[in-house]
Length: 180
Image 1 (spheres, rainbow, N blue to C red):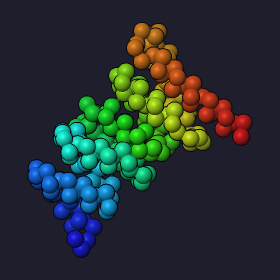
Image 2 (cartoon, helix red, strand yellow; image 1 turned 30 degrees about the horizontal axis):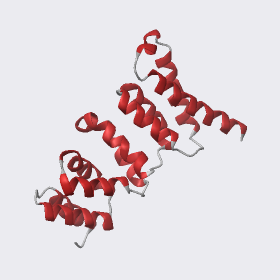
Image 3 (cartoon, rainbow, N blue to C red; image 1 turned 60 degrees about the horizontal axis):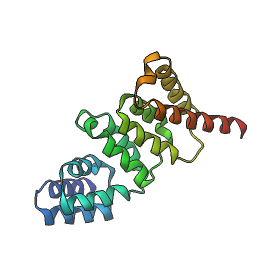
């Protein structure tokens, strides 16, 4: 394991080996070595596995503390392969306590596009963020939400109240920033 690309290749091969002991060993190595390039592989495996592998992957993903993986996870939310698993991916953000303030507008879009449970996950993430939020992210999120609420049919949606709460939280953070 002399070079980083060689290590990543080896770990990827071990993850895909299909042999539980090898996969579990690879997860331990990834926990020690860590690399954001492996996030899609880890999430892909997490979504399809059961038993000990699923448990170890859940522990690893929910204990991520390196905010450089935030970008990799955000990117997964829009990849066609992972769109059906958005709800599960969103749980990683709040369980791991990852900082998503720089992606507030993306989270708002996901809440608007998603189903009730995805919207609930986004609300949980936003509720657990510490201010300040980037002003541009606040404005982009509020524009998207305002557009949604301008539709008279919006009130009929199951996630309407969740989106109202998301909007309120964002507005409060925006108002607080103005006062600071």
